[in-house]
Image 1 (cartoon, rainbow, N blue to C red):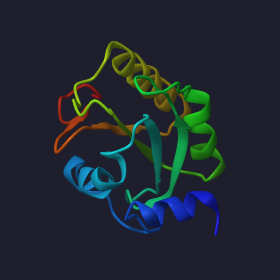
Image 2 (cartoon, rainbow, N blue to C red):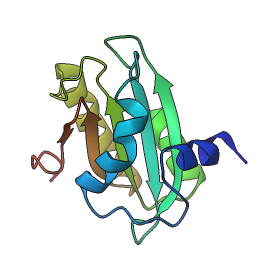
Image 3 (cartoon, one colour):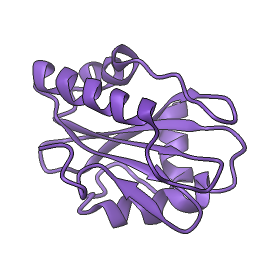
Length: 141
């Protein structure tokens, strides 16, 4: 098994699982990410029907920050012929509210996805018992 596939199974995601809503993503990632002491940034690669191809751990940051570059996010998406992606990361503080950096990277990922033809469907921030969805807030239109 590859690292990405093993991680998918740990997160409760299996190849072919459909992702239908931000809540379904939250339910699959909350237990995995809520108690982490550092930020983890994951990208879920999806096929044309929004079924999981693979979950990729893109980066592990510090207690308060995760350094992510669109190149790292979309490298896996391109190499696995993903039709779309969903990004997920945690806030160790428990507050899922987006930081200025979260807003900026989401904007950059949205633009990169548009250029590559691999749309960013959502970016979720996992907190303690709650989450923030950029798509639900209308920020990815």
